[in-house]
View 1 (tube, rainbow, N blue to C red):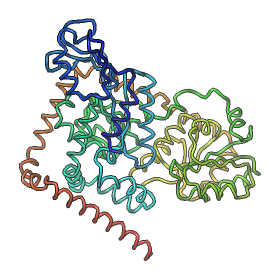
View 2: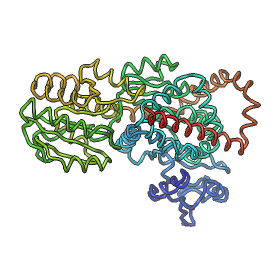
View 3: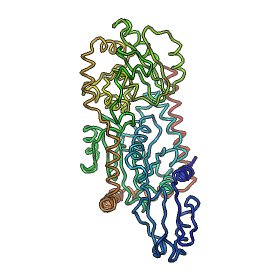
View 4: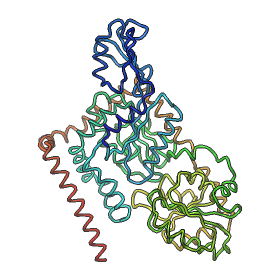
Length: 528
């Protein structure tokens, strides 16, 4: 489904009595069947009966895309109010963390502002940019399973010349489609929760007059380090989870006033303290009360090595603490691993789960966690006060998360399954160590981050009329000046490659090069 079709469906579902009054005639018009131009045409002929209860030639609209009190001028000098602020969250399904952060922010907007807002989250590369960028989630999944390929992609995006080439290529191929999608959405504020979104979306928005007044927010979801692609000087606000990321943002050229630190947005399960005791949660979830419990998670898509880790942990608990412990394994969508673990005999109490939607409860019932170094899981574990054993990290992207956990003494990094099991067993044998790490973890937790970020974005949005227009246009003018040299040297080339056949050829060339690189990696692995 294209973004335009999706928005049409969502608007129809979100309409809450969205009618336009035809004045004294008593005729009702459903805005879902009318374009903006038809509304304007109707306004021209509304005459003295154009607005209900008045004779000023206006029409009144109650639309989910309009905010009360905001006025849009009509062709005949009339106007109609916007009932809701439209919030667009841009993400990409490259791993579950970005989607989870976007969902957390959407839930916060809906809880805090209810009917005053209409929040949509879209996959930028699939729903806005379209082909050939629809392959990006698949490339990410492949890279996640092949660290050498992932490291190459991470470096490729960090190195200035290759990053600049990629930006130009993406802009040439996707500019028009992205522009059409953003114009169709007509958002009042845009929030990005993915590093690959900023450059192209802001480049397109600079060419759309309507968006010159719309605030643009970036919400960074990494703890200890952040890729340069996260940062863009034209954003209005940049929300960072830690002071370390704040420093990187300043080094990347953002101003102090643009950077705000509230923590990393987490799911609504973690916003409030648990209402049940740990033992009560354990009984409800089918665990034994009074036994120390380790939680092993793999993420929504499952993870390589989960089975080996679970076996090693159970073996170590059985050997070192005489089986005085229990284990929960969350396999995500990895059904094959779940089936094998369910059919295996265990020496200690074990609960095996697939994909779950109540992770807050499972974390609340456990004493420590074994996980990859994903920022979302780390943020949630801190809130629940869980010491962490980090078993794996993506090169570049998640290395900083490992450093954060180790430096704050809330966990360790163990890449070998056997070492993971030994560490968990040692913690169970010494509850004091586990308790100290739990206390430090809770002190770092930021359960209100989602709400605080949503409140600040809303405040910026409400003040955008008085503050944002001049500030944003000043930044736009400065950006234009900084890009003049590139425009002069590349202008003719860009004019030549903007033709449709050339864009298709460039896209195909890009795909061929990418596929060729993947094949070479696979051949190298086979030879080894």
